[in-house]
Image (cartoon, rainbow, N blue to C red; front, side, top):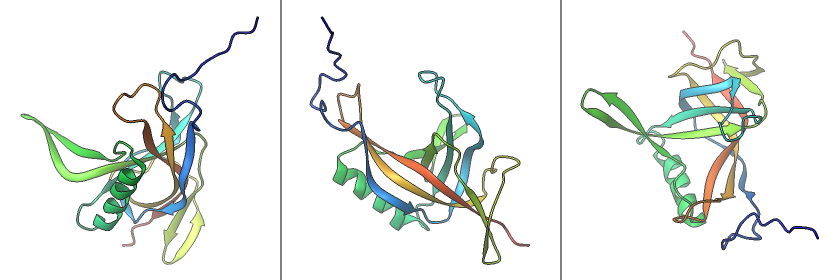
Length: 170
């Protein structure tokens, strides 16, 4: 007798695990905070899956329109926020800097391009981008079904497609 395997016993049963909400979106030019585009990392619960990511800071003044767009989309889709507050450690504890972080990630290496003097060329990274460098990211916005959450049925992630690095000119 064959056993029937049940993945979910929740209202999400029968729903797609992950689906695109927006395809081919582009961020404004953002500041890099953390980068793992050259050397992949793996989560402990999925040790065989490489992940490449770049985390950028959204400036609350310069990038207000972009931040509001993401927040409206989260509200419309009924998902928990994918944006995280940027915190700085200080002797008395962590302090909110006023900026929020957005993380783009993929399970395959993505093409990286450099934009300098109006020309775009493909770039082969020799080292990860450093904090403060400027990039623009092309990505898909994905909604995924959560397995263990009681507060929210869906989450949102940003699937990395391409990265455009803006070379500083002297």
